[in-house]
Image (cartoon, rainbow, N blue to C red; front, side, top):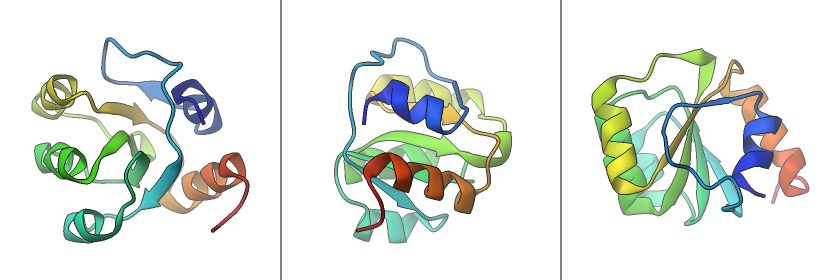
Length: 113
């Protein structure tokens, strides 16, 4: 799924600049526990979470996550945005909760695996 397909599916707004919407991801992972994300999220993923702080980007970098989908339209602090742009991680704000966002991405991926 391309970055643009993810954005449309989640009715999202990009927070980070300089994105190439034709990039793609092949997985999604939902968790608000960053240690769980580090240990279990597959590479090449979208992370669905409410965690909107700098440590989220550090975990994404370690786990090979390309997009953070911040749920409930939570604000993204400037330090998180800056770190994401430095590390090449896209941040997307979505109005959906984690469950709804996960269901939408599951449909986009062709169902649960």
